[in-house]
Length: 104
Image (cartoon, rainbow, N blue to C red; front, side, top):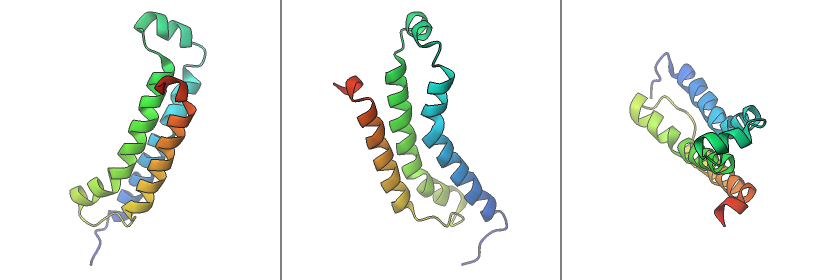
């Protein structure tokens, strides 16, 4: 099977996007650490609920990204989707464990 000339770029974009989705809750938590109380008062949004949603939703997105990339750009992604799905499942479990108090 012949690969297109831009398939290495698609692989890099996939890995960067996956790492961003995995790290986004940590970034948001770091940026909003001082304004947690103001966020809750102004918007009525609990930061822990938001981070749990971002962590689990981002993990679910990463698990299907290889399939979407394959469907949209052909066979340009060389990564097997099953290890990414396994890592995403474990990462979602981490976020559920970390915010267990929100889930109760």
